[in-house]
Image: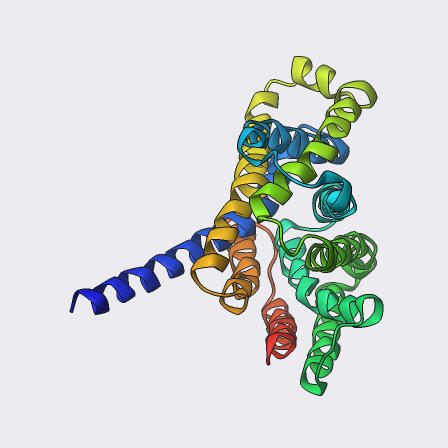
Length: 297
């Protein structure tokens, strides 16, 4: 009886972690939007990376033992493609499209992960996975073209930034698999942030108007608080939580967070007065069907 109860408790805990992770990542897009009320897109992105770097730096005391010469390419790829470049692309996208649409398009990541794995990293796949990629892309095109005709060009233009960000994520995942397979994900994250964090700080304080914005805008510290939450929870802690989830379950269960993130992003968008049409739900459903087929073994 005790063993059964223990299994049930573990299963319930894993589901709680999964939902918590979806809430954190799904809320990232509305937090970016709040940051953009005061700061430029570049400032929000640089702040996000720099604050996450400061938060994770103390963990280096525990995770400093690593063969840096062997793994530096993996750390750099993870830092640049998994964090630095997407941070700038996502905030730039949200200067032209809604946070909810950005969150919906983020669900393309698994599709590009498989596609780039096949094209660049010689990953093996099945016909059903390839069909999933095609269906997902059809859903993405439909999502970008949904709504009023005057919004279409704007959606396509700024939606490209999100697509590029998901391609970066996909490259990062494949690089991690190839270069950092035997490295603890927390250790990899700490070292990746160590490589990119200082540059984000230098850019923020030397090449943006961040100091002037802080001094002159009366709600600057409020927006800074939102960006800090984004950096600490959406970038730093979420990776640790995701690592725990993979260890407790498997990669397939953990990857199901992909299905929940757009739902959370849409929920925040609706609550914030953004326009979410019934057609959006249809197209995001098609994308998620593609993601399901991509993950199908």
